[in-house]
Amino acid sequence: MDYTLLFASFVFGAVIGSFLNAVIYRLPRGKSLVKPKHSFCPNCGKQINWYDNIPILSYIILGGKCRNCKNPIGKRYLIVEILTGIASVVAYLKTGFTVDYFFVFSFFAILIAITFIDLDFQIIPDELNLTGFILGLVYLFIRKDMEPVDGLIGAVAGSGLLWLIGYLYLKLRGIEGLGMGDVKMMVFVGVYLGWFGALFTVFFGALLGVVAGVISATLSKAEDKGKFAIPFGPFLAIASAVYMLFGDQIKSWYFGGLM
Ligand SMILES: [Zn+2]
Image (cartoon, rainbow, N blue to C red; front, side):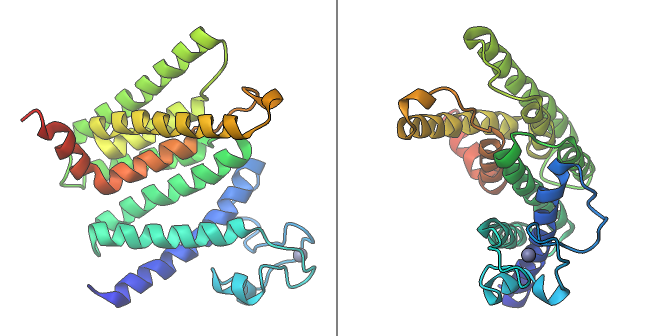
């Protein structure tokens, strides 16, 4: 184990996490990702100096407050940076220092951005799904662990199944339970994970969503019951990340009994 590379991959991930914070803030608000180049305090609007914008460290040094207006900076920023750092380490442990690292880490990074935007706005921006789909498509022709056709079937099967579930839910309950963003997200996830991974993601994600829905309905007040929608993107993200990491084990466990 090369601990220097391990540490470097965490630092690199945290830096990308800092960029993801800008994506999460700007993309759903229709703001440009490249202009302005610098970060601004969302409260007082003052430009944040580079030395106050170092991932994780600056948050700790400043005590989670803006240097200018002392307004608290959301813990969210710190969480996204640490999470993306961990995702980078995990991708490195899975792939080593190879070209696969770039594609696997990109997969996790897009899932993190999707999760936090969906939690805040209940939308999944097309830009993220499309970027993920294109990366997954390119990766199909590089990777050795999967046939390209498997990724293409995964994209169709995953999005098709989720669309069908959403359609039946709408017919049966008269409520829009899923957005088209979730369906498009499964095109991206499916091209990365193949047909079995795509189906696993839909079923395991739905299971997580139902469990979370029951818990939050139990905890909420009676008059709020059934009123709020739970974003589905984060559950699909968790399920697909689990499969990206443990897909081989899940597959052999599932098919093991049949052989
Ligand atoms: Zn400020």
